[in-house]
Image 1 (cartoon, rainbow, N blue to C red):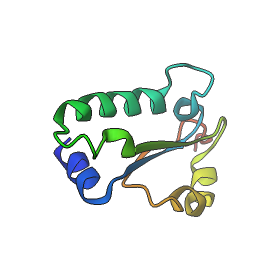
Image 2: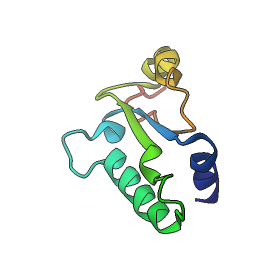
Image 3: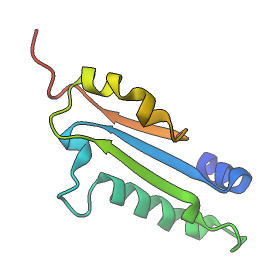
Length: 100
Protein backbone atom coordinates (compact mmCIF):
# COMPACT_ATOMS: atom_id res chain seq x y z
CA UNK A 1 0.00 0.00 0.00
CA UNK A 2 2.91 2.34 0.74
CA UNK A 3 4.28 1.90 -2.79
CA UNK A 4 0.90 2.69 -4.34
CA UNK A 5 0.52 5.78 -2.15
CA UNK A 6 4.04 6.92 -3.05
CA UNK A 7 3.32 6.47 -6.75
CA UNK A 8 0.08 8.45 -6.41
CA UNK A 9 1.90 11.22 -4.55
CA UNK A 10 4.65 11.41 -7.17
CA UNK A 11 2.72 10.84 -10.41
CA UNK A 12 -0.94 11.40 -9.54
CA UNK A 13 -1.83 8.01 -11.00
CA UNK A 14 -1.59 4.29 -10.38
CA UNK A 15 -2.92 2.10 -13.17
CA UNK A 16 -3.61 -1.61 -12.83
CA UNK A 17 -4.20 -3.89 -15.81
CA UNK A 18 -5.92 -7.26 -15.56
CA UNK A 19 -5.18 -9.79 -18.31
CA UNK A 20 -6.56 -13.28 -18.75
CA UNK A 21 -9.55 -15.41 -19.60
CA UNK A 22 -13.17 -15.42 -18.41
CA UNK A 23 -12.08 -15.83 -14.78
CA UNK A 24 -10.36 -12.48 -15.14
CA UNK A 25 -13.08 -10.88 -17.26
CA UNK A 26 -16.10 -11.54 -15.06
CA UNK A 27 -17.77 -8.49 -16.61
CA UNK A 28 -21.18 -10.09 -16.10
CA UNK A 29 -20.53 -10.41 -12.34
CA UNK A 30 -20.83 -7.37 -10.09
CA UNK A 31 -18.75 -6.65 -8.23
CA UNK A 32 -16.07 -8.22 -10.41
CA UNK A 33 -12.30 -8.41 -9.81
CA UNK A 34 -11.61 -5.00 -11.29
CA UNK A 35 -14.34 -3.33 -9.24
CA UNK A 36 -13.32 -5.09 -6.01
CA UNK A 37 -9.63 -4.22 -6.31
CA UNK A 38 -10.36 -0.62 -7.28
CA UNK A 39 -12.86 -0.17 -4.43
CA UNK A 40 -10.60 -1.70 -1.76
CA UNK A 41 -7.55 0.32 -2.83
CA UNK A 42 -9.47 3.60 -2.99
CA UNK A 43 -11.11 2.91 0.34
CA UNK A 44 -7.85 2.08 2.10
CA UNK A 45 -5.89 4.88 0.47
CA UNK A 46 -8.52 7.50 1.26
CA UNK A 47 -7.80 6.81 4.93
CA UNK A 48 -4.05 7.35 4.39
CA UNK A 49 -4.26 10.43 2.16
CA UNK A 50 -3.56 13.53 4.22
CA UNK A 51 -3.54 16.01 1.34
CA UNK A 52 -7.10 16.08 0.01
CA UNK A 53 -5.82 17.58 -3.25
CA UNK A 54 -4.12 14.25 -4.06
CA UNK A 55 -7.05 11.83 -3.93
CA UNK A 56 -6.87 8.10 -4.44
CA UNK A 57 -9.00 8.53 -7.55
CA UNK A 58 -5.82 8.40 -9.64
CA UNK A 59 -6.22 4.64 -9.37
CA UNK A 60 -7.61 3.15 -12.57
CA UNK A 61 -8.15 -0.49 -13.43
CA UNK A 62 -8.29 -1.81 -16.98
CA UNK A 63 -9.69 -5.25 -17.67
CA UNK A 64 -8.24 -7.14 -20.62
CA UNK A 65 -9.93 -10.38 -19.65
CA UNK A 66 -11.51 -12.11 -22.63
CA UNK A 67 -13.73 -15.16 -22.36
CA UNK A 68 -12.05 -18.24 -23.83
CA UNK A 69 -8.56 -16.71 -24.05
CA UNK A 70 -5.59 -19.05 -24.03
CA UNK A 71 -2.04 -18.19 -23.00
CA UNK A 72 -1.19 -17.75 -26.68
CA UNK A 73 -4.06 -15.27 -27.14
CA UNK A 74 -2.79 -13.16 -24.23
CA UNK A 75 0.81 -13.22 -25.48
CA UNK A 76 -0.37 -12.13 -28.96
CA UNK A 77 -2.23 -9.15 -27.41
CA UNK A 78 0.50 -8.25 -24.92
CA UNK A 79 1.53 -5.14 -26.87
CA UNK A 80 -2.01 -3.76 -26.73
CA UNK A 81 -2.41 -4.75 -23.10
CA UNK A 82 0.74 -2.93 -22.01
CA UNK A 83 0.14 0.16 -24.19
CA UNK A 84 -1.41 1.93 -21.19
CA UNK A 85 1.89 1.52 -19.30
CA UNK A 86 0.32 0.00 -16.18
CA UNK A 87 2.05 0.31 -12.83
CA UNK A 88 0.81 -3.17 -11.92
CA UNK A 89 -0.42 -6.10 -13.97
CA UNK A 90 -2.52 -8.96 -12.61
CA UNK A 91 -2.52 -11.98 -14.90
CA UNK A 92 -4.61 -15.17 -14.86
CA UNK A 93 -3.85 -17.40 -17.83
CA UNK A 94 -3.75 -21.07 -18.64
CA UNK A 95 -7.22 -22.29 -17.72
CA UNK A 96 -8.23 -22.57 -21.41
CA UNK A 97 -4.93 -24.00 -22.68
CA UNK A 98 -5.26 -27.44 -24.24
CA UNK A 99 -3.67 -30.22 -22.14
CA UNK A 100 -0.42 -31.64 -23.43
